[in-house]
Structure formats: structure tokens, C-alpha cells
Image (cartoon, rainbow, N blue to C red):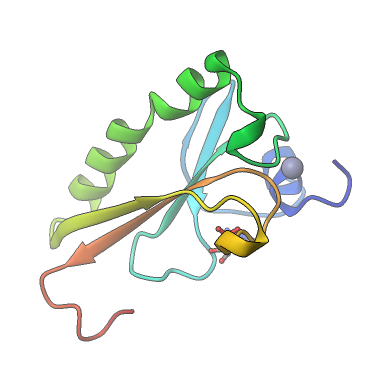
Length: 114
Ligand code: 5GP
Ligand code: ZN
């Protein structure tokens, strides 16, 4: 998709800080960093939202969820919890129309963070 920001990141046309990559997915730090370590897991195939996943794509993407959660905990030892969420549709606050899963680390002291 020519006008898709995440396709441009996947193609390397826009820089990102990569957390993980294989043939089917990429994970990189969210530019907004809701909390330190905020990461997005993104299928390389341009799919708009969860409604467009078939079972194979779901397995390819979601198999990485526990691994990325553990990698973030290892990288951010102060992290004491984690929100994992996936927005689908503008009404559900999806702003980039290339499906992605948010990992938002949470810390014991949340005063400094959203
Ligand atoms: P959504 O609101 O669609 O669930 O989440 C989209 C996320 O993509 C937002 O948290 C936003 O900060 C992030 N984002 C938007 N543009 C870029 C970008 O160019 N690079 C990175 N790394 N993240 C982006
Ligand atoms: Zn895309």
C-alpha cells in the first residue's frame, strides 16, 4: 500500500527502532511511547484490521505475543505489568489502518506516565 505508513516502515523507507522481525511480522517501538518500551507488533502483509485475518495469519502474528512480552520485561526490569491491545476501526481509536498490536509496559510508579 503506497500511502500506508507501516508498509513504508516494513519496506525500510521510514526508520523505526526494531524489537523483532521475521518473514511475516515486524515489531518496533511506537513513536509516541505512551510508556517507555511501548511497542507495536505488525504483520508484514497489509491487512486493515482483525476482521481481515485468516487463521494462518492470526497464528503467525499472535504466536509472538508472549515472546515480545517477555522480551520487554527483560529489557525493562522495572516493568511490573503490561497492557496488550488491538484497536479496530476509527470508532475504536485505530488511527493507522494497517493492523497492529500494542504492548504498553506498566511500572509500579505510574505517576510519570499516562
Ligand atoms: P492506533 O491508534 O492505530 O491503534 O495506533 C497507531 C500507533 O502508531 C500510534 O500509537 C502512533 O503513535 C503510532 N505511529 C504512528 N506513526 C508512526 C510512525 O511513523 N512510526 C512509529 N514507530 N509509530 C507510529
Ligand atoms: Zn500497510
